[in-house]
Image (spheres, rainbow, N blue to C red):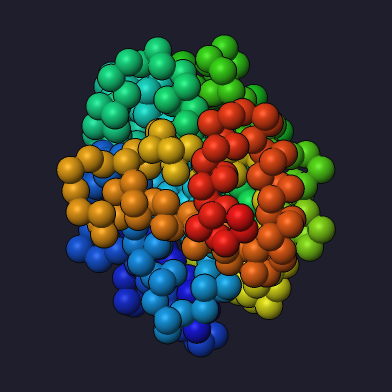
Length: 373
């Protein structure tokens, strides 16, 4: 069966999305027994867990490993983006209101909201769950670490189709981190005076840029949809020629009474046609070999991954061990070579290595396991 993996948050058995997916004959998996405390481990233990879950699911014979999609929202949208950047083998991903810049959301925006007595109530309610994320960044000036654990810093690593859905009025995950093109130049009338949801331009490295700025422009399609009736259903748009699509629903500026959107309504965004298209094409047609992704895989093989560090002193059969990371990467590269060719894989790896001797040596080790030398 095709598989939908819903990361981070638990998908309730009575959810409309679950019924729609199951109605198509697709399998659905998500974490269970979710605890809000896991939000505080979003960039470390929780990230490793969700990679481990996806790895486990991919190896189960009941699922078609060429037709796996990841669908998540908010913090789950962050995880969907990170799984797309870190993993091969995903046919597609949909991230709704995703946190693509943890430096902005958790180091700048949420602490600012926590300090203000007049911060919007629902935002204030959510902030405390995520502030422990900062403990994974002991050196707050370590720009490279913030970038490595933010999707905006991994924009050259997405190798499969990706749809991002964001609403202009989102107060929990301000839209600037997805795109600045449709942000209002003022906050809503209900917002406290001087309270800004804007992404600062002067943040270090790429952390002051939107994800739209960092994605390959020639592979990115943007849809701007004005919300005239929040109860009206819509269909997730996509472009077969451009794998990355940003869908921006415009319902006005942020409001203190909102959450991920200020205009509460019953309308749904139907993602079934998008997923049907991607499943029909499968990995054989959807997966690209992006140089950034290949370098991430080589670094993980070397035990140098920031996002998925190799844990020492654990069983070599356990996810998180260097042995399993290496096994995982060999399996995924073998899958791509089976769908394409070993020669094409070698050419892509040589380009990604850019003459770096450590990368080349690691690739040679992988080649031996693939039976290429």
